[in-house]
Image (cartoon, rainbow, N blue to C red; front, top):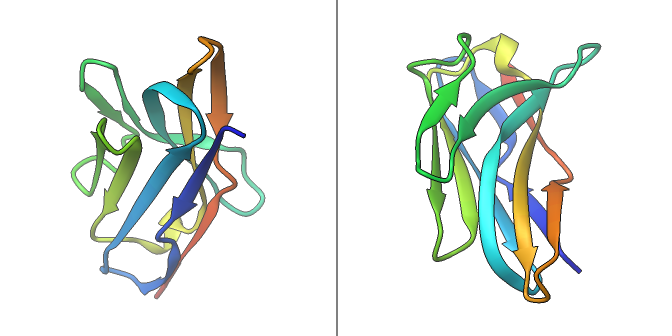
Length: 120
């Protein structure tokens, strides 16, 4: 079964750092991570960071200069380094990726989410 599994969330003080990771598992032919999203309590899910197949990145204005998205094609992973965290970064973080299976089916997958809580 194809799936994305996030890890690395937790509780951190404002100003601290966390690194989120997302790994794809299953019969993968190719892995194309697309981005990280988050959903704060009572709010809609929003894009945090995106990465293209060519490696170009795009960030929400609220995280520019603090967050960095990266990918490891050999390991089928995508990560989000989060520095100088703020209370308003609190939320459930989800990774999103496209996967081509070994039977050449394309699937767009979402992870189950990992909770990030930033306290003041």
